[in-house]
Amino acid sequence: MLQCKIWPRWCTELMEALVTWIVGGNCFNGFVCVADIQATFEFKIQRPVEYYNCVQKIHKIFDNLCVAFSGDIRSGLLIIEDLSIQVPQSMKENEYFDIDGQSSLLIEYLQNLYRKINPKESPYLELMFLWVAQEGEEYQFRPFCMKFKSPEFRLNSTPQIGASQSGAGAYNETYNSIFSFLSGRTTDNENYRKLFGRIEEVPHIWTVQKFKNLLFHEASAVNFPGVSKSLISFESVIAYKDIYPDWISPVMTDAFAELGVEYGNKSTANHNFNYAELDFSKINKKMAYLQENHPERFEAIRVVLSVAEELKDMESICKLPEIASDQYVDDEEIIHSQKLIAKWSDMVTFMRGKNIKPYACNAIA
Image 1: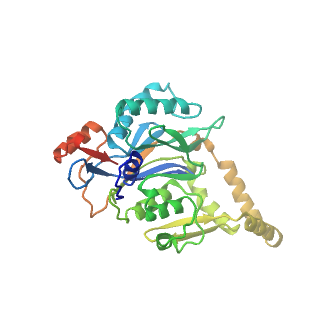
Image 2: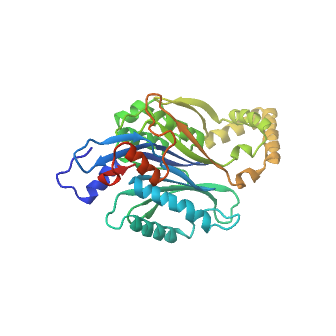
Image 3: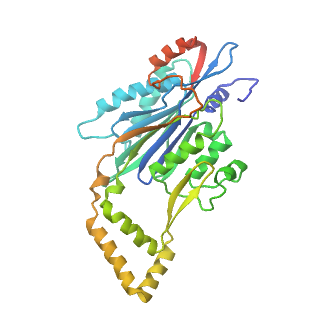
């Protein structure tokens, strides 16, 4: 923890940001959000900091929307509770959440509710909204991820294929290395080399499953006060896998491999994953070579791809995908609440059970 002789508000906010790690991903086939479950209690009297693995930091708000929070637990859970009521009530039949054209209304709502909850103080709070929506006149769904930081709650958007983090990752070299890798960037430090040094080309496009599994395996191996090794995730997977019938997928894979698409497996420090690498210049050269030197193979591949084109059905990616949750539980960690705490009233009950007075400490996620 940082030590400050004078304790201005910005330093308090920075301290609170140093616990929790939340990562959201706009992936090729949907969104995923991964968070730890640890609550940190910093006391206003002489009492050591206490940590409990007990709090749910990601919440399903609506059929297509999840919201995660870091910072002040009271503010986060109370806003989550209100969102869970207000968002469904504001939706018409067959309507889904989308921020397009509504960002100013959402920001105003968050500002007003935050001030109502905190009339005298301004505790640090960051909200991460993740959802899928149909953009413009398009029928297919795509993922969105945006952050809002107190007290202004200005919008901070994530690229269409990209990642966002909140909490301790910005101040911890190992977490930052994991985040950089998932963002498609290399980092020149020892931690990054230990984790990903065997991989020369960093992937730039992830599926939800690969993004989540890499986080589960790498983040759970990090020791950092205020961040649990046990993790939860919420995800929404757009059904790209259902565009083509199952039987033709391996045939298409063989055809792509013959055209020069490279398939393989890469290993990180604590995980490995399959990958596909496309170099269109190589593919064009291979196609030209086959057409000139092996016309029968070229024709066979053309027929496979033509059949696949006739069989494809785009309806699967135009249907709203469900939101599912997952978890990674570390065998050596104690989980202090069998059901993760999702409401502030339940957190107050939990704190009193641990002889913690709610107004005698800062409860931080």
